[in-house]
Image (tube, rainbow, N blue to C red; front, top):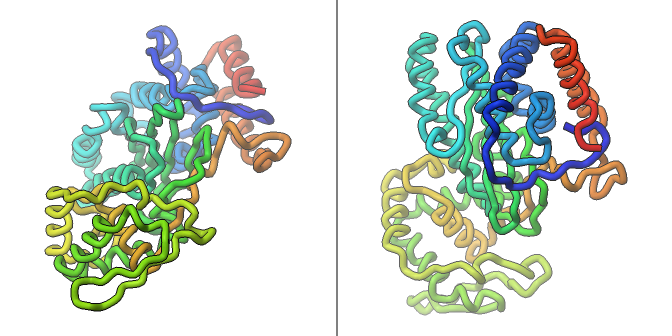
Length: 387
C-alpha cells in the first residue's frame, strides 16, 4: 500500500504466475503466524475488514498494489496458506472468486461441524454471508457486478466479509468490507469501508442513513396488500415517461394523485426516467410472494428469495415518486484510492491510519522466519508502495 501517495484500482485481466502465488502463500503463512500470535485471531479478522490494511497486506505479499487482482489473489493465497492449519490459527477463510464464491455457505457449515460451533451459530454465519452479498448487489446499486465473495471468521465468532464487484464500462473494480463488530444493522450502513478508484455522481444507496424513510416505506407498501401495491406500480408503468413534470393523474376512482415536482433542483435527475416498468410477470410474482409473507421489517424483506435490485428499486421509486420518501443517491464509497491525495483533493490522506498500518505490518514482517533478504524486500514494498 502507499504511505503518502495515491493509487489506482483498475480492473485487470490475466493470471497470477504460479511462482508469485507460491511466494505469496509462503509469506502469507508467515505473516499470519506473526500477526495472530501478536494480536489474536479476532484482531486479524477485524484488520481484514479495513480496506487500507487489506491493501497494505497485499502489497507486502508482492501483488500489484493497483490491480483488482489483489483482492482475489490475496484472499486465495491466505486461504491456501492456512489450509490444514485452521485450528492452529483459529481462523477460517471461505469462498473466493466466481464459482468458488457460491460454495461459501457449504464451506461455513462444514467448518461449523469441524469446530463444533453449534448449528445455530453456523446458520447465523451463513445468513450474514448471504445477506452481505445481497446488500451489496441489491441495496447498493452502483453498477458494480459482484464476482468475488470471501468470508473470514474466527473460532470466537468474529467475522469479516471482503467482496468485489466489476464495472466493465468504467474499467474499474470496487471492494466492499464488512466486520461483525461494526454491523449494528445489516441493511443500514453496515460497511467498514468501500474501496473504489472512482466516486460516481448517482448511486441508489438503500443502506444510507438518508434512505431510512425509503426502507420503512418499502416495508409499509408490501404490508398494505397486493392490490394496493400493484396500483402504485401501474402508475409508474403508465406515467414513467412523464415524471419530469408536475402532474396530476386520476386513479380510476375520480380522485386526484399529486406527484412530486421533478423539475426542482433536488430532482434534476431521477432513475425513473430511464426505468423500464413494462409488465414483468416475474416482478409481479416476487411481489405477490413478498406480500403474502408480510415481512415485519426491511431486513426480512431483503432476505426473501427472489427479491433483488429491480424489486427493491421499484419499491423505492414508488415510495419516492408517489409518497415522497426519497432515498439517498450519494455514492457510499469511502476509500477512493485514486482521489484522496496529499493535496487534499477531494480529501486528505489519512496519514495516521496509513502509518499505523505500516508499523503493524512492518513489525509482523520482522517477526517472521523469513531470510534477512526476504524481510528487506517485504519491508521495501511496504514502505515504498506507490509514491
